[in-house]
Amino acid sequence: MSDTLIKVEGVSKKFCRDLRKSLWYGLMDIGSELRGRRHGGNGELRPDEFWAVKDVSFELKRGECLGLIGRNGAGKTTLLRMLNGLIRPDQGRIEIRGRVGALIALGAGFNSILTGRENIYVNASVLGLSRREIDRKIDGIIEFAEIGDFIDAPVQSYSSGMQLRLGFSVASALEPDVLLLDEILAVGDTAFRGKCFKRIGEVLHRAAVIFVSHSEAQINRICDSALMLRTGLVHFRGDTAEALRCYRDSQSSSAEQTRLVTDDRVAAIKCLHMPEKLAWGEFLEFRVQIDLREDVAIGLILVHFALDNEFKANSEIRLSPSGALRLDRGSHVLIHSVGPLHLAHGRYQLSLSIFDASGKKTVAQVFDLAAIDITGPIGSGPSHLVPMTLQVQNLNPH
Image 1 (cartoon, rainbow, N blue to C red):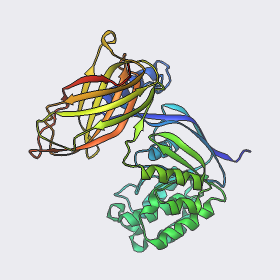
Image 2 (image 1 turned 120 degrees about the vertical axis):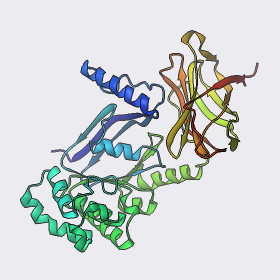
Image 3 (image 1 turned 90 degrees about the horizontal axis):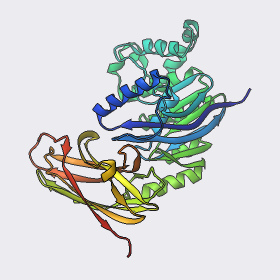
């Protein structure tokens, strides 16, 4: 029997930034599945959608520990949730052999009104253990968790450190074949982290482990290899030291925009000018340079405004296929004028999406394009659709 416990082939997952559109797309996808079509459609992005994970492939054998690294928003947790079966991939295939233990978030899988002891029985039962097996293991789980008399208190009364200790103890003690750990060792005291690493070493003899952390020391300590994600794509897969070097390089250039180009015709895209602050009701003017390898026809441009990671407004220019904006191969500057901005006081994160003449296929997306401060009345009601105009400056030599 092969010792390969995890096999991931071309896995992709997309999400939608707009809640209403997300619900509508979900209904459309359900209808497509009822007609016998593949979940996820033809792989093209619809307006306001983006790839959280794109075309990820790897294998992991028993006894191997893979470090999963990348900046916040790179797609690490999304990938783990697909591996754990919490969400379905839109494309690709995941094969996992054996029992999966996962600690993807503090308290994940716990019922807050049940006691710690009751949650141990519930979680172990879900993993397929019998009552007799749980009775045999529960004392060791409680002892490792170090929560003493609180084991019979409701989990909602636990601190984050107590939830970590109980969650890790349950996930690692039930003899999993696959163990998924997401940033959980960032919480807890030094002594308990040492116990966790020792337990992971014990689990590795019989399991495959995927470990997510921003700590280079932790990744170096237990991982045989590492996979670095960048905006959902595999940026590097291989030796741990080399992966961490790539990660450090990406961290040192954190001021650079995180961009995802989804069309081979686009060589590069960057923001040239963005004001740092605007007053309520003013117009926002910013410039984006796009370098093209081939001619492109653009039918839709979307600018997305988010405040504290929550959608607030969109601004768009939508053109008919016959009236699409046609850009020749070379460099162009897109001059956007958006407003008036009747947005609540706060610091907004902007993202940019550019679609082809049909308005459906993504030409390019730029996440975290820039951040701007809107000053004005506190709690001003947002305009969900903000007007925008566009001018184009051709930088190609004549």
